[in-house]
Length: 70
Image (cartoon, rainbow, N blue to C red; front, side, top):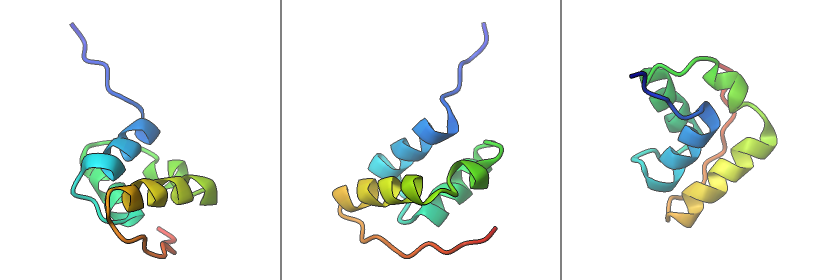
């Protein structure tokens, strides 16, 4: 039986809402460590970064300016 892994974006929001990540950069690093591919391209858009920062803020984590060009 094969395991179905959730998509990169869905996992990013899980990490933002309940993980130990404190920034979009932390989320990128965690996703990469978990074996997700193309993480930077998935999380590079301004809209997705704003949404992830909003999810972090909702959890009480101060948003950070994320200007990574990795």
